[in-house]
Image (cartoon, rainbow, N blue to C red):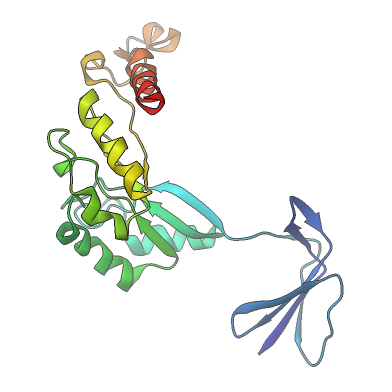
Amino acid sequence: MRLLLTGGSVFRDGGFHPLEIAVSEGRIVSVSPRLPRDGASVIELNHHFMVPGFVDVHVHLREPGFSYKETVFSGTAAAAAGGYTAVCAMPNLSPVPDSPEHLRAQLDIIEKNAKVRVYPYGAITMGERGEAMADLAALAPYVPGFSDDGRGVQSRDLMRRAMLGAKELGRIVAAHCEDNSLLQGGYIHDGPYARLHGHRGICSESEWGPIARDLELLYY
């Protein structure tokens, strides 16, 4: 069935414009100020906005390993309902996707249950433990980048090697910036609110310190 979407504003070339969209067999086939009806089923949008599908580059789908928190099905269904057509899933899973074998467990669930496109990150280090680097080259064909999401890479040298490897492979490093030596049992930002209410705070340097380190490595 051919559909014609009319009466809306389409985001194009950096702004919204009064355009019509023709859809055939689930695909956009034409965008123009005025399109022929030709027996199409007309959908009046009543001045709503039409935009390309959104992309979220940092989501937690938590499968495999933590499906009591989220699943690929529920997370991507929520994404679709909000206009997102693609998401990048973080690797804080069990097993951690630090090898193609471990990543396969996640890819199988994605293939079966995902409602939108899912691009999974590979881990920077084995098990996200920050000790030995994951096999970035073996993971690269299946992932947009690498992250130890939820855990900062504490070793400067390990992060340097990961950045060099990612650069060679044409992938990104999505860094979780947190210096474990400065956490000291804190659980919220160390500011006036924490002190006023007796909460154990975490200093800002625990975040900006690793960011500064990683920027130096990028310059290198």
